Image 1 (cartoon, rainbow, N blue to C red):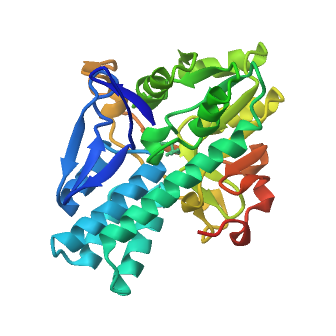
Image 2: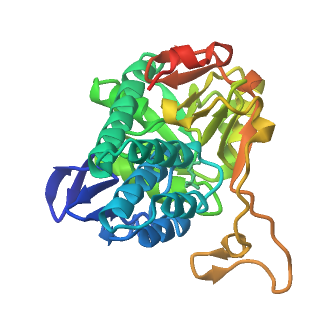
Length: 335
Ligand code: MRU
């Protein structure tokens, strides 16, 4: 992704390996500070996934792959490292896919630094291809709605949902993006908006509950979101609030797409209802920043993801093209 740091334009990924460390863009402090932070052990990588220094399905997968490379470098037990990394967050399939690939490579006696780099570059390239395929769906002058952050920060580079948006902008189309703020962690307001600023894409952040109104008034032409895990029947989990956007899009006759690389597809699950949904702590709901917004003594629920049934999806934008949910199968998506 193209970003400006200290007045200098640079092309960087959300995370990468530098010597015997993994370097991350610290997603916890954006958009106020643009800083890098390093992990040198499996435990540090695991904590960075847990505290969302790194987040977004493919980026979590990349962190898992690099974490496994660190396990080999530091002489840690590969199985224990894999179990620790897999315990960090339950919903995004990329983590399990990436760590599984590294365990297999380790069993074949391979160098996990080389394997992790190859894995990460492969997924980043698939995200670039998602942009090329998805660009064809975005018409000149389109208003695009997206939810959460499915940009380069979430996906190593390019983005999943944001990749077609970047590609449309770079190909000279005049487009406008509505970015849902995405309570409670505000990934849309903080991260998607930051990426769109970096890329010079015209946009507005909207409150999570504003999308229906804009759809009803004809102000949204297409919805593109990411995915954390796509089940065999095309149902998919994504950031909480995605499901209601899909239902509203159908009600208003607006095309609704999800975008994801092969690493997000979990063909072992028959239905989206089998996807494990992360429940996070109550404080994320009680507080906005450091400010408590609820009375003391009340309860909160904080499911981090929801499942959108395949019947609401117009298409799935993948590295091999735009597929209808019922077209998804292993043959079409090979690594
Ligand atoms: O909790 P997060 O910030 O990791 O959730 C991220 C999302 O839900 C994204 O939309 C998703 O990972 C798909 S795109 C990378």
